[in-house]
Length: 498
Image 1 (spheres, rainbow, N blue to C red):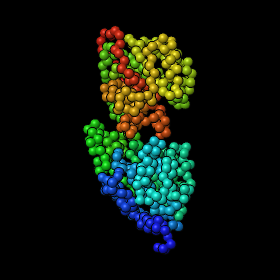
Image 2: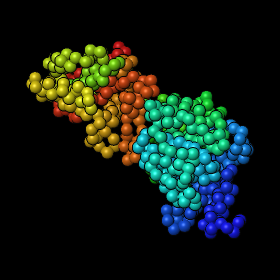
Image 3: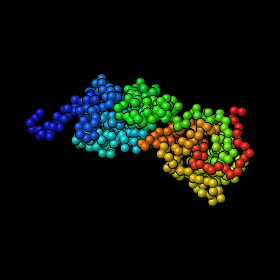
Image 4: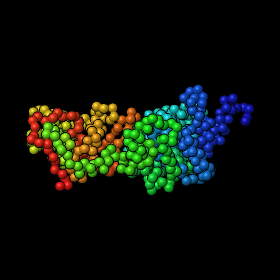
């Protein structure tokens, strides 16, 4: 080393030589680049978990096998990790970023996740955390927008990007012919196929890499195809059971096993890292719906009649009135208003008033619950009905606060009440209602609350808006007092099979 170099330059050169030795050794890099066992956040840790170590060792072998020479493009390195919760996926993603950025001059990368919240608070936050702990931290500027080599902001960087389909062009044009173009997708099961398609364009030259991580909540889409379907031959697939990781909360896993059963879709996806057997992690399974279609029930004489009104948002959506009396949601047929007719709010008010005035058997509707979510017309319609003297009308905000800690919002809460009711209730043989009840998926937020799949997300994967399901769920918005007066005897709704 020339004596004319300053001491700092000599140290920097020695560090560059040292780090360069890990070009094909990401596991060695992870051990050497972070302060394991030293005072601070890693004081109680000795290194990667078993599955992380095996992944990094595999990756090093793939780099060695390709023998990229800086000129001739090699085949992409592709990996897909399907796992349960809490195994350290975000941590491994951060290590990958630090390793690639530190060992590959002029590399270019993009990191994304299923939501901006996940990207900002988990995925990119992990990159920032580990980037500051890394031995090469002094080489890089790391902020909320980008991580880049100082002095090379435009040609040696990695940046977080939203996975919204309208943002797909942000993933295009990423090339590094003499280095590595790389993509890291977190919670990839919910990353749109369009994003994957655009990413393919950045895997055509140099030493490209693509890493997909997620819980397998869906049985369709690019992540499912990569891990379990037609594309799995292109990827190194890693399945990680949460029970096998030293990082997971074993007490919580035991509780899930007790609450849901080890063979349930919930446990398969959230713990075992396997796709659901009942479609896209159905909130309500098909068997429960089928049983409710066949069940005969007895209705107590004073059970009140309640009605749920789900309002259309336009287009193909429909306005639906659904009726329930105790365990019977079968006897009174729904009232359906096609979407194109739902634009006439006064017609809806007149129809709703007729529903409230009508006598069904021996009863009128005791309470009508109206979807008044966001910009819907439900709020004004409910107000108008009350002005007409119908005090038995209550607005329901789907996005409002749930009365219990189990659910993230009011819509998830009322669907939870519906799901609890179905094993004892009776519903009609109605194909549309059946599809609506079994259509929505669900997941758990960071506070472990149930979040029901939105109508918009259902439409994005080719399903209709669950208008009938939402209308029936609305009948569970509040407990309604028993009806005044008594009928002569308990009522037995007719069976659809008789």
